[in-house]
Every structure is written in C-alpha cells, then in structure tokens.
Image 1 (cartoon, rainbow, N blue to C red):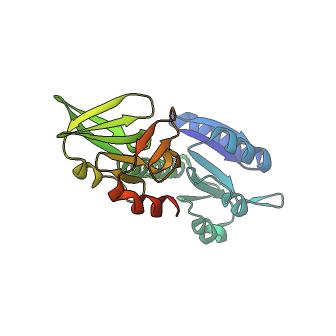
Image 2: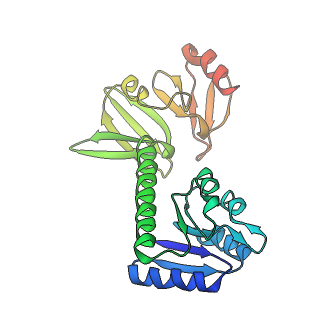
Image 3: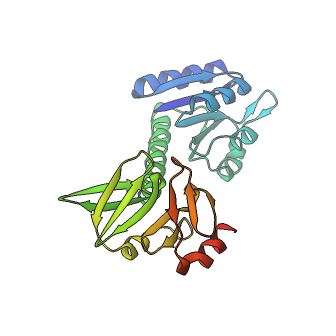
Length: 232
C-alpha cells in the first residue's frame, strides 16, 4: 500500500513511521508541510492519505476536498470535535491522538477494505465495456473502446479493431448490436456498424473513419437515421 502522511508535528509523523514499519507492506512518505504533501499526492498517487486536521492555520478538511477520488482518507487529530466534519468528506476512519498501534492497524484494515471495494467497482465498470466473442474454438475478450467498425459477412460478424486486427465470430449482426451501448455505435448499412467516435467525416453516401481514412457506405435505408445521430 502506498501511503502519504501529512502532519505538522514531527512526533506524530515518527509514530506513523514506526507503526507502518511494524505493520509491513507499506510504502510511506511523510510531510510536515501540507502544501508539499498535497503536491506529492498529485504526483505520486498514493492509495491512502493520513491527514491531520489542524496544521498551523491550514485546514485538513479543506485539503481533503482536494484529494483525488482514488485516495482513501484517514484523519488524525487531537481534536475529537472534528470527527463529524471528517466523515462529511468521506474519511474511512478518524484516529484521535494519541492512538496506539492496534487502533492504527484497524484504520489501515478499513483502508484496505475501501481500496478493495473500489477496485472491484472499477473492475466491474471495466467489464461492462467488454465483449466476449466465440471465435473458432476459443472465447476472445474485446474492449468496446478498441472497435472501429463491425462487418456482417453471411452468418458471421467481423469486428475490426483500432490496432488493425479483427475477430471473426459466428452470430447475426443484430445480436451483437444489442450488446453495445446505445448511442455509441451507429448502424450505417445492413452490413456495417460503426463506432461513432471513430467517424472523421460523412456525406450522404459514405462515412470516413479516423483510422487510415477507411471509407464505408451508407445504405439508403439508414441514411436519415445516420444523419440525425451524427448531427446531434
């Protein structure tokens, strides 16, 4: 776990260093100057931030509002009355000074759970941007963000990707179209589905893709729908 601790009290930082060393598995950086610590957070992207609340006129609450959403926040302070403010900025725990190792360890366990949960959420969101296609005798996972266009060939679909490769799978184009996010892919022809973001320009008869100036025809049946979608 990558951790940054910000506290204007050197003794408080030394305690955190000792506890992190005892716990193990933690890459720690400490800062007694809040602005330097915040700059390093933006550069390094730690998993967890341990943040004091009152630091020589600098408000830890205000600093917390500037943290990246990917950071797990734990407040450390000698002032218990700040606890409510801490949870309002989504702190996972509040360490009231002085605290012992066992309490510190529980806070880090909460941070690990928070990080695991958010990683699973990101993984789940990523999974919804993928297609699993059966190609020959294996399953191939394709990221929707890499698709240029999809071509219907008899009883197969050929998914053309941005890196120049393609995946051939036996299924109707309509079935694949139903798996795609609404509005991100446009049916321009009975044989072609195109990723909207990959269209460089279009006319009443064809679209030109951003990749290698590939040109695809627009079917008369789809013309009005294509123009309506591309002019939005």
